[in-house]
Image (cartoon, rainbow, N blue to C red):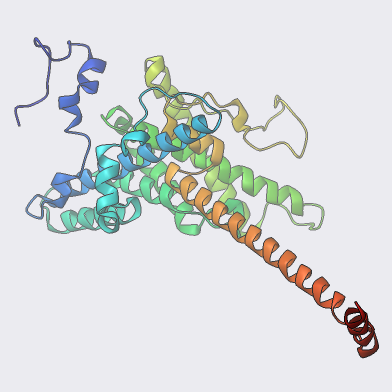
Length: 346
């Protein structure tokens, strides 16, 4: 209530990193989304607070995954929160998971934003909040493995809409908060989408005489145009930032007469050349092609599937052993009489 802690006898110095890391100031950015939970607060404020909570949850998921991997290889990660039960935000989400889990709270933010748009007399639209909602919806979409590139139609639509908003409002990249990193990760997901579509097209090129036509060709061109425009905008903005604040350095597509490889099996955009962001939450988009929350869900699903597969194998071995045992005792009457007569004689 007294405001942010700044330089004093017991507080942090004037350096921005010290102020952001001071325990008193962390109370303002961790824990339950108090404004979102206040039904009397304005709808737009509640929507923004809900989105902030969803972003913190995704960052907690990313940190937890890195700490788990480090623990498996025996590394000691400084500043780990997992041993203490997680961050204040993680504890609040676990205590009220139905309302505060990432997907549900993003849906609530969308509803509150629509409510604000329908009742507000403001002429200016909240492009930044709208961009955050669309980005989070795309990030939290689990994807569709049967679809082109593993993306759902709604997810592709949201990604393209984010590109449209940022191209019309490039000043949003300078806004405080995670908007710049969100747009960068949207561009990374577009790279994965282009790579998937390009691989599918290359695989079907030998069996079909048609190329470059149909709905997939139109979609590929639209995604390609959006990606190239956003990549140029992000690269210009990235050059203006200090090194520690820069998000991904996104590589260019493997096209044109000066491309590095002519192999048809090469990815359309080689994400191995990405200059990755220092944030753990952003690195997963490059390495796994999804947000930390979706990656955690896929890991849990894979572990359950592996456990079920192991149970099935054990059950099959047990049934086979029972069958062998039954075959051993499946003797005719003469053999049984001979065994009994030997027992009686002994």
